[in-house]
Image (cartoon, rainbow, N blue to C red; front, side, top):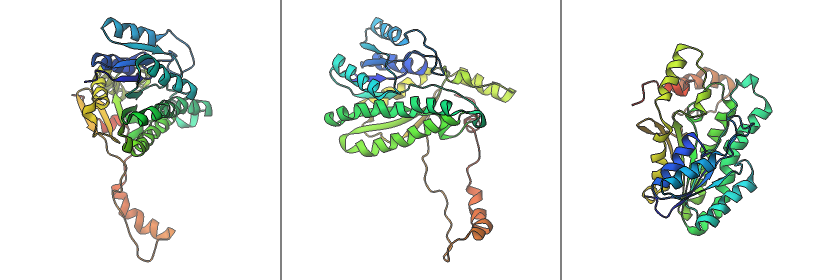
Length: 301
């Protein structure tokens, strides 16, 4: 389905990113495998995982090149796009998957913890997307696929920096979809639920959390890749501005913010009437403070 397509996959040295890069290559795409090869918190350097994935793709008969630029650096994002064009002649698909985590309860979070995570996830998604935008616009086609998280679109504890960045990606994706629609460029989000380096950080402080982690362990990162392949293909030309979630063999179309209930007072509202009447009418429709584990409470199928 992707013969002749060229893709950039960020954070593709391991886990979900690696599975996506391998799958896109198996469908015929040429792939720029980007990975900074650092520890999960973004601090320590490790092996060059991008080159290892390129060797795997080439051994399977595919085409790929390695890139080790940081998505948090706009100049690095520009080099990624330039490498795709120099190596393969054009670019069709951008998969924004790179990320780090520095999970802490909000009252323990430092400005550096917040900044580092937002820089990689949200700024990184903007940087690579913007670096590719002019080329997509000139070609009159292209597909952006951004990784968000159920922690953001539903909620989770101890991840305020991660949730803020990942929900920012949802807004960015929708804006890209609107702005680029006239140029036949699509933008969609995926909230993956799969076992990866990032889900390894989820604590198991009680039996309920331990059961939740055991569910996630059953979900291979390979289950995410087919939807990415579809969204990058011409078969998805009518799909844009959407949020999908994946859990093993389940694919969900996630809701987006829309008015769910309204109240009206012809003489206008004051603080007292809001308290006495307004909130009483709206309260039955309040969203509960659920976490993603509580919303996806049934076993994956």
